Structures are given as structure tokens and as C-alpha cells.
Length: 198
Figure 1 (tube, helix red, strand yellow):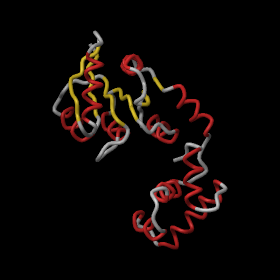
Figure 2 (cartoon, rainbow, N blue to C red):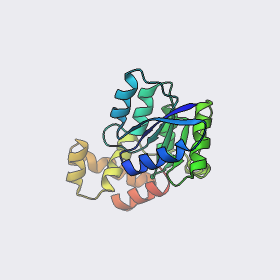
Figure 3 (cartoon, rainbow, N blue to C red):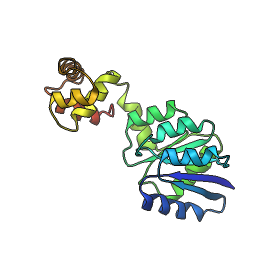
């Protein structure tokens, strides 16, 4: 039996997935948690776990950080926001599986079995997009500021959120705009997102 934990802050999604996976003869859902912290607290009490199916975006620590802290436990990240950058970060953190939430129950079961066997299971479309996206020319700080720019707000708002001076923020945004060939920060955000860099 493959012992599985599911982590998703949307309880309906988590419970539905648990029900579907429990129908498989070789899979047993041993825990359902609403956050990475909750799952880690459960796991640290000595609970046995083979594979963690974890949402990418959670309140508190995200799925990638949860995977890092689980160490040798196989992790399958599921998300509604599948982007090349997230896949690269997940793979760098040792995540073995990555699927969109639109996958079928059979896809999830196959991915869990692959992860449990020590193999990778990545959504083929996302893998192809990640390869074609290439390496981002943006620095970490430029990426962070473009993500903040994508939420709207003035340069001052972005600077405050990033704990930077407005002048420094303008310099980073100008550099990012030049790298993606955009006229303004909103266009830069859109282009970088389309290319899978944020």
C-alpha cells in the first residue's frame, strides 16, 4: 500500500481527491491537511508517509517549501497555476511530480505510483512549455518586482511591498522592461508571464 497525504487549503478539492484516490486498491490516504505547516506537524510525530500530494500555492509555506522540509518523502505538486518558473523551482527542491489540477484521477494515481517508485512524472504540456520558455533573463529582484507590478499599484506601492526605495524600484523595473522589450511595467509583467518567466 502506498501511504499518501494530501495538502490543499481548499477543503473540497482535498476531500474530493482523497475520495478518488482511495478507490485505487494500492493507494491509502492517511492524512488530509489544509496547510504545509499542518502536514509537517503531523509528519514529525512519526507518521509513516510515502507520497505527499501538495498544492503549489498555500497560505503560509507553499508546496515547494513543504517538499523541501519533507526531505526524502516523494512529493507530487498539483496546481491551477502551472508555470515554467514554478516547475523549475519545484524540480530544484527535489519534487518528483508536477501536475495541473485539471488532470484525471487516473493521471494522479499514475503520478503517485511513479513518484513512489522514485521516478519523475511531469505534465507533458508544462514540460514542453518549460523547455521552450528558455532561461529567464530577469534577476530574482526584477522578477519579484514585476510580479508586484502585475497586481497594480504605483511605484511607491511596489517599493513599499518590496522594502525598497522608489528610485531603486524604478531602476529595477526599467531594467526588467528593457530585458523583455516592454514600454511600461504592466506590459513587461504580461510579456514575462506569457514567456513563463514569472
